[in-house]
Amino acid sequence: MTRIYEEIIDFIARGASPAKIAEFSPSQATRERVAELIHREKRQELSEDEVSELNHYLELEHIMRLAKARARAHLSNE
Image (cartoon, rainbow, N blue to C red; front, side, top):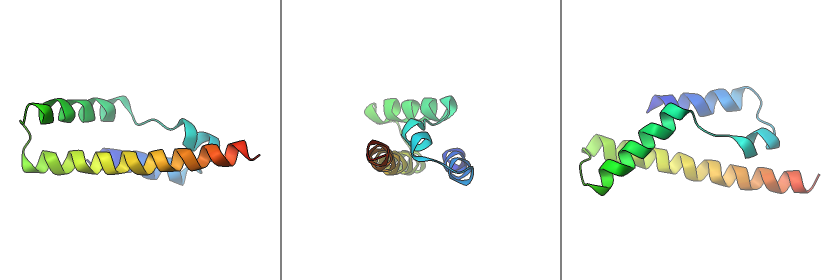
């Protein structure tokens, strides 16, 4: 779980411009982990910790979608 937090923190710390925010994508490892959790959730195979982990991923995805939308708005106003 800390991997995605570290990715986002490093991304922000490097100085994320609106263009970089609009293009942000998590690492392949993170995408694979989320896909695995979603697949296992559909089969009702997640532990409580994994449900919590998936919820964190989904919350971060929502935040990044909002940031990307706002970044695109800023870019279109330039």
